[in-house]
Length: 314
Image (cartoon, rainbow, N blue to C red; front, side, top):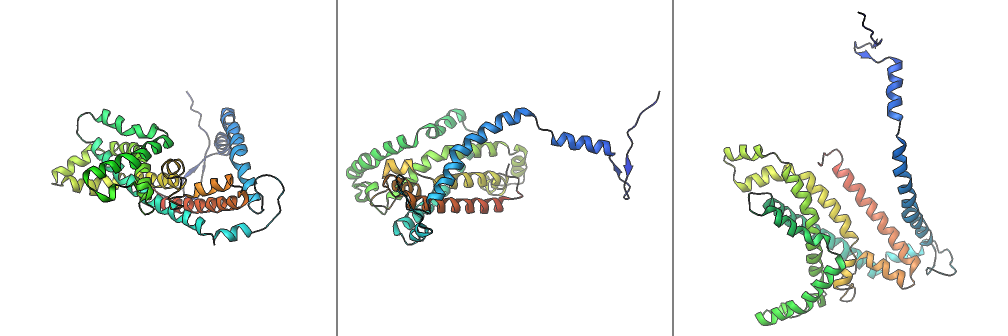
């Protein structure tokens, strides 16, 4: 019986190298792409290009004009962009949006993480409680906003009057200094379930024997939380911060349902400012605003990627 072997060549360092035939076979296998991949990729790419890319390019083009959305227009160069940086209403919308996003991200992650720790511990009815806490995620944001609008405008003032609490007798939504607090509360109420599910997935993946070893060493529950749980789920924390911050920057429906940007313009987000400009015949100016916001979002994404590069988040 004879054994056929594939010839190989040896390099100068003594390691075996593949024959040219084997190299060609491996290269061919790497380059080959199944046609079914194109069947799913090409239609999605075409739809994305027609629905997102092309309108975006057209919008950027018109940001250098004086167009109102219809009719004739003329090129005005960087006039719209220069005006934006001296517009107090635009600057206020950026200040509110970023401040609101930072506060809401912190609130959502703290509450979601604590709930996840509780819902993965040894308690009864964990499955039922998880279902209850996830319900806000499946309800429309505008519906949630209108429900809370009624609570903040009617129920809480009545409760404050009955309890003799002066600051609660008037609606928070009518107070320019406190309206943002109501928006944070409602937005966090809807966003917590999504972050909660991600944290539960991370906590379930932590090996149980790690906690058993910590208990044997005499570590308290708080020490286990700080020294074991948080470091092991840090990747999930990063994911929730990135997803949450990007989502809150585009806040619109809940703000519309609660305050509609008021009182005055104290709670008007960037998205509300852009859309109101479109409806008010200020198309080119707000397209410039949207373009600046797009560039800011890209910069934030690049910074986040640079901070998380090389990490195995999951």
